[in-house]
Every structure is written in structure tokens, then in C-alpha cells.
Image (cartoon, rainbow, N blue to C red):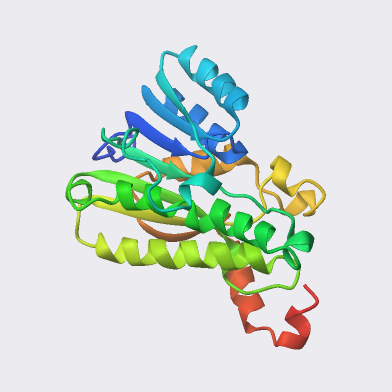
Amino acid sequence: MPTPTRRPIRNPIHSAFVLGSTSAVAASICRELVQRGCRRFHLVARREQENQRLADELKSQGAEVSLETVDLLATAHPGSATAVSLSESFDLYLITAGSLGDAERARSDAEEALAITAANYSGLLPWLTAIASPERIERPGRLWVFTSVAADRGRPSNYHYGAAKAALTTFCEGLMLRCHGKPFAVRILKAGFMATPMTVGKAPPALCASTESVAKDLLRRPDRRGIEYIPWWWKGFMRLVCWLPASIANKL
């Protein structure tokens, strides 16, 4: 029997632009990418020292890395500059930026509510708009955007975060449909719990996927487009949650 051969990737990922590069899942994806031959990275994050550590790690494996320090609270306002780092093209645009924020404080503090919205939606809009330029979506490329299963239904514990992720998901779904039939692929990743510092103490460890396994799964099929749940079983779980009557859903 002949040995099965892996279908070649039509457009290998040799370069990556990463917004939110100091997140645990972004770092894992970058490490997996460099092992698979990606040799150029542009890392954008708020935490400069952590970003530099990731850059040093990637450089030690032969990658060329440039860095940019950005606060999404600033880019949420009109006129923010994102054109410099997006003037060149990349094979992959990875968006993992986001923050749970302080949900309790946001209930009575409009400033915190707006900060959560900026970190998870409005601060990303200038970047997404620049990435999905009319010229760029006519060329081969990929945009992977991490949203959240929290977008599927409002919950009393985190409705500011969920609302911002829902807005991001809807925006990206429209962008995905705009790119239908074009060589630029949009991939919306609705993430459930992952084993990251953001979920410590907030989720049972048994329900948390490792960021390393998520990175490997995504890169097994890098040319996919559409909406996916991460891990896959969250799709069925969230469908059930959306069917629940409010009297039960309010207790989640």
C-alpha cells in the first residue's frame, strides 16, 4: 500500500503579523510557526519586556523579528496610527489581543467598561480595517481572529467582555463574507477556556485546553476559513447554553 502523502499547503506561512503577541496562545502559535519554517515576525503588544523575550526566543531559532509597543486604549480613538507596521504584507495576520478586565468594577465604572470594550473590540478596529484593505484582500493571505464563546450569550458575570467579543465576532463575520471567493481567508476562532494566566482560578483545569495543542491544531489546517470553536466541543456546549431558558442561564 502506498504511503499517504500530506496535501501541500498552497501558500506556506513564511511571515506573520501578531497583534497581542504576549498572550499565551499567540506565543504558542509563534513557536509552532517558527518550527514550521516561518522566518519573519512583527510582534505588537502592550507589555514591552515580555514581547522582547518572545522576540529573542524566535530570533534564536533563526527568525527575523520586529517589535511594536501599542496600547489598545489609544488605538480605539480615531486618527490612531497603524499604517507603519501594516505597510508591508504578511502571510498571516494573527489577532489575539484582549482582556477580561474587572467585570465587577465595570458594572458601576464607565471608564472600566470602555476599557474592556477597547481591549476587545474598538481598539482592534483600526488594525482590522488596515489589514483588510481593498488591495490586500485581492492577494493570498490569512487573517485569524480570536474571539470568545462568551460572545454567544450574555451572562451576568461578564457581559461587558461578552458584548465586546460579540461585536468583534459580528464585525469579522461580515469581513469573512466580504472576502468570500477571494484569496484572502478570514478565520474566526471562538475560544473557550485555555490554560493561560487569564483563566487561572476562573475555570476548572479539566476544561482548559493547552495553548500548545491549540497552536498545533490550527496549523494542521492553516488554509481553513470560516468560524470555528476552540476546542471543537465548545460548539455543541454553547448551542445548549443558547437554548437554555433565562431562569437557568442566569445561574451560569
